[in-house]
Amino acid sequence: MSPKKVVPGAALIAAAAFGLGTAPPAAAEYEEYAMNGTYSVVSNGEWARMNDRYQDEPSVRSTWTVTTTCTTALTCSGKVTSSLGWTEDIYTGIGTLWYVKHYVPEWIPCPDGSRAPGLQVYEFYPATEEGMTQRISDLWLGEDETTGVSGNCGRNKSLVLNLPVKITKIS
Image 1 (cartoon, one colour):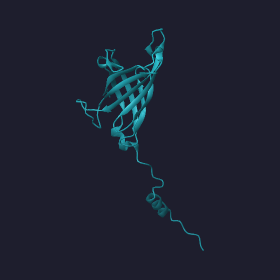
Image 2 (cartoon, rainbow, N blue to C red):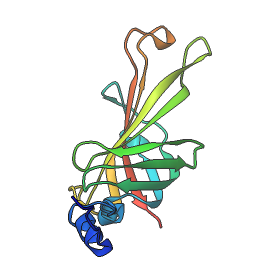
Image 3 (cartoon, one colour):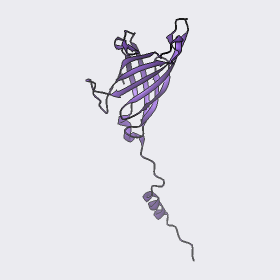
Image 4 (tube, one colour):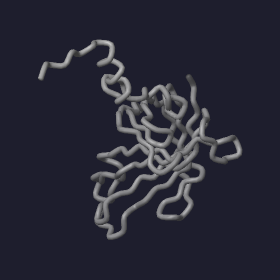
């Protein structure tokens, strides 16, 4: 039996037919769903709730620089750098909901003068001015929730602070 001749052109055609040597679809295909750029972030203290009771809190304003990549129209992740001095992961959950989780080491003052930590979670979605979900937008609405650990400051119940958050693309 004689050895088979390999024709270079035929090998390339076979590789292309079976997907060998071709790159996977580029993330650029889903770039329109990504959240990239500089954003103004306002957590509105006028509508704050502490353990589901409304109480005025100071509003918090910051600027975020966001870089994300989407592997599908519903799966995105990246980094957020806040003008408040922290950098955290950002990612999508179910559908159009985005999340940023930030550990706040000295969040709540205790009666003894110490401070207890909290976990701040931003949950938001792309929206219209009326608050309706819109898949692609320069406006994002949601909630900024910070939760303390049960037992902090000698309290059995966790403190939970909720503020509505509005995120607007600047550039």
